[in-house]
Amino acid sequence: MRHCVLHQSEYIRRRKGQFWRDIARVFEAETGVPIRKPGQTVETLIKERREQRKYKSGVAEADTELKQAVDMFMVRYEEIAKEEEGLLNQKEDLAEIKAKTQAIRHQMMIGREDRRRRRR
Image (cartoon, rainbow, N blue to C red; front, side, top):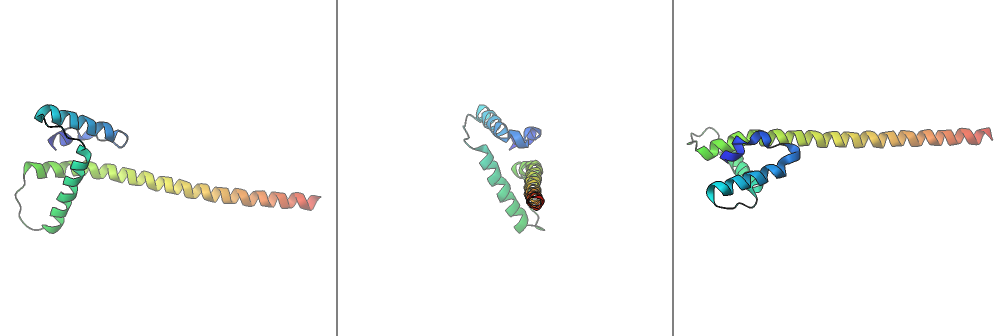
């Protein structure tokens, strides 16, 4: 987790795969233990931490280094999630605009064909 926090600025929307490969490489170099899917491991830690916060709010709890690191990385993780959600919303909006534009274009073509028929 410490490496994730130290390098969190490199965790960007388009390069997540590379980020996790780098984290796995650094972790293995430091510990000698290979880690296959560090992204899933961190996601699990974040989900567990959210659950802990939900059920233990208001209760004093010892802060470990791991909990602090998860909390710090969770901020960046949520920023990226919001960015991706915004992009999805933009894509949905664009698809809706495109559909409306096509419908208007279709109506205009029908009107144009009707005018041509009347002229004949």
